[in-house]
Length: 309
Image 1 (cartoon, rainbow, N blue to C red):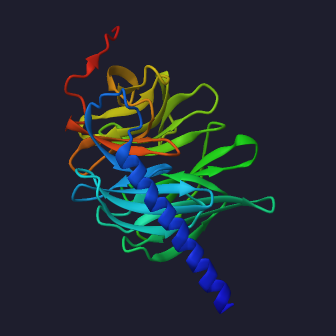
Image 2: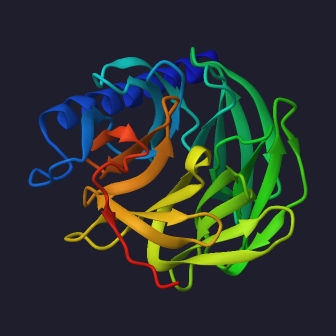
Image 3: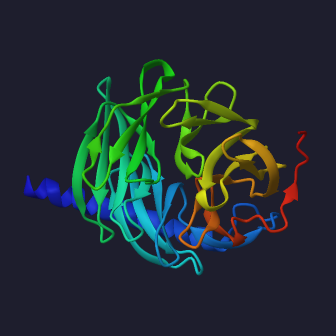
């Protein structure tokens, strides 16, 4: 048993070393060499999956492959890897419990025909402190707003649900059914209320759902990777194809598009950092970048959209 544990630990170290080496690849290549970023870009780890902004211009990136995953703490200004550590290979999403940690990881897997899900709490030094089981496979986790995060649950036949998790107790609440195939779940707080944002699996629109009333609205365009900024009551989502990728700016809670800004063709998801800047995670399996927009919320110089009244 001791020898088996040592072999497992050695394999974990080797896998994490492989992940770290991909950061060097990302440093020498961009996600899109012809793309001129609207903000500042720094390299990130290959195989980036999700991110959680932290205090002090730091961002925690979950990255890896089905065989191994790690969390990378990166300086948004320089791209320097401040710390990295291996985590559970079934991790699917990441959130920051506070701007200085700990972090929460959603876990999801299918084993022997069973759906396995959990939320794990990790310290920023790389220690796994708590594990809380979930009813089924977790496909991701939202940021924390008002003392709660939501995990996206995967059910049978593309069924989806959002389940609240209170922090710091990590108490699991009652699941809320979502559209079939829903993905890219995020939690928003605005002057108009608290909302869940997600992309529906049928039409590809971003759906906004009131947490308390269940009322819904949707975006006018197919979009993904949505986030929101409470300070200006707006939502942001990635729209378009490889040649016309952009970030749509939408008014909450109507989801009417009021403007847009350019996006990398590899834009994966959007976040708000501690300095009220919009951050884009641009990623492929081989490379990734973290793009921080220079102006608050990235809206300076954004093209406007005429809206019929």
